[in-house]
Image 1 (tube, one colour):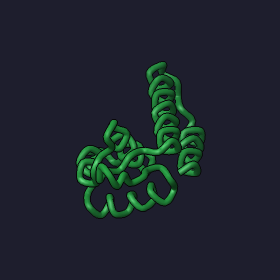
Image 2 (cartoon, helix red, strand yellow; image 1 turned 60 degrees about the vertical axis):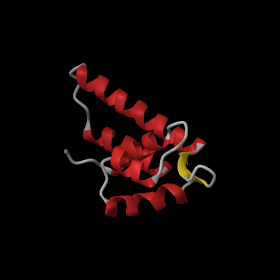
Image 3 (cartoon, helix red, strand yellow; image 1 turned 90 degrees about the vertical axis):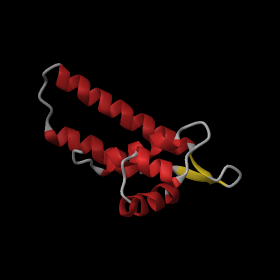
Image 4 (cartoon, one colour; image 1 turned 90 degrees about the horizontal axis):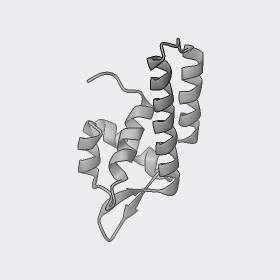
Length: 107
């Protein structure tokens, strides 16, 4: 597996929790290809920032409105970068890093 930055890992976790009934920690860990130490690092971050919430009745974690917004922004940004690369445009690394930092600030 290739190196993934924090934004990609968080996007994968949010995507996993965006299912209709949410997802348990184990499912999120498996679908986002995380190790247990990674899960322990990122999970509190997502809960603390209100991107995930715990559903006591279903015993699962669900994505919040803010989490959906961050997921949508991340997906849109990745699509824009892929489109730009497919059009054989050179992407200025400063712009790419600036956009990723924008998402990190939101998280």
